[in-house]
Length: 219
Image (cartoon, rainbow, N blue to C red; front, side):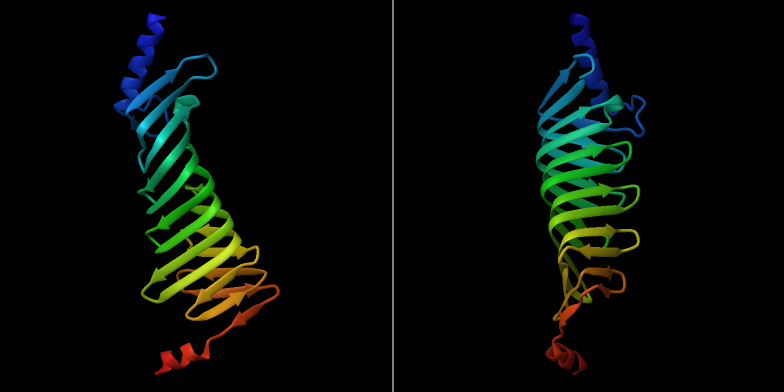
């Protein structure tokens, strides 16, 4: 028993200092309290109180983080979660998060917010999946998206959204609506090129165009 406790303590010390232990990339962690579960087949490490895990490109802080799987591949995070992706330039805020370090995949259930600093976008929804290697984010349920830059403010609502950050493409479905420069658009499906602000409507289409805004722009 003493040997098992010693090995667990040594493992935690090595991990805390950032030893890779065969994982795809080096990572470190810290917390106010750390607990190791040694039961065979259920080995895991639980961080609680100002918990933080840092990998090569990602920083995760939460009230509680549970690490498990081979080389601590999987993370379950709860409470006041903040994820900073330094490689892709965005921040995730939520209360519940599952993260797979090996394939850079995140799943959030519950209200969440993604701040895409690179593309000046704020994304909100009740369910989110983020595939880091593909630069792809799927958002579902009560989707709200706001883009604000020098060209103006664009707001989008839908029940489902597919966002390709690298291509700056946004696809909306499930009663999608877009408001841009005083005009309102609705359709079965709406695609938005965030680089050019081009809006494509498919299926049954409706819109409300503000002529007043057009006259103001022409002055």
